[in-house]
Figure 1 (cartoon, rainbow, N blue to C red):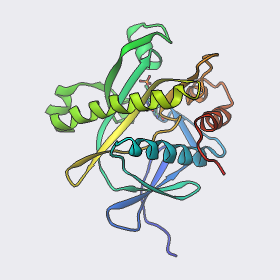
Figure 2: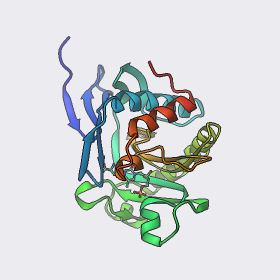
Figure 3: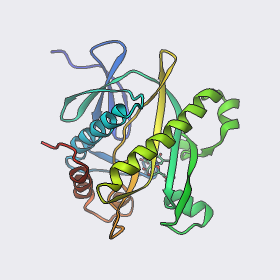
Figure 4: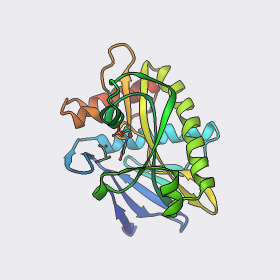
Length: 237
Ligand code: TMP
Ligand code: ASP
């Protein structure tokens, strides 16, 4: 077997060419970053856990009718996905105040946001992922109005589905970030869904069980990811 061609290396994943031109292989690394890559550490086994976690969530979303790029697991750290033309916009949805929303608007962490708040950010570490709006996206041609509308609607639908999944497991889904891309004129959910890109709190103790443990140096990062995976029923070998 020849080595796969490496196409791109991000902070948490490597993208390889797939077995078909329309496919890619995602490799989940142990590398864990925060503050746009300023803080970086390797956390043993995180890559395997996030690959299994992401596969479980993507399969659940697909069963519920969400178009995702996910195709199949290929190994402990690898999954095959559709090759997408990625839209450089991060779609965030928030059910509770935390993180940059609390900092920007002075809203106390934990305040319930009803209806959930939706925000858009440009995916650009050098610029620290600045917040953008529909008119920036239109003016700079990052996506069409139809695509932005679809991304925001899918983000709300995915939020409903994931709030249901996590609350049944005694977890509060505080917020999360999604990325979308296109293939053949259709929009698909891309990137990954894992505790690296969302906030999850234990519903009773409000303990943080996501990447905020790493951002804040709380320790027990991988153990928290494993506990979340166990509670929602992610099969881990
Ligand atoms: P924020 O509070 O830092 O704006 O982040 C909101 C949510 O989106 C949080 O769950 C983390 C996630 N997120 C990422 O995973 N990567 C990013 O680049 C950004 C801006 C947010
Ligand atoms: N994922 C981004 C980074 O690695 C932002 C974050 O999660 O804090 O810097």
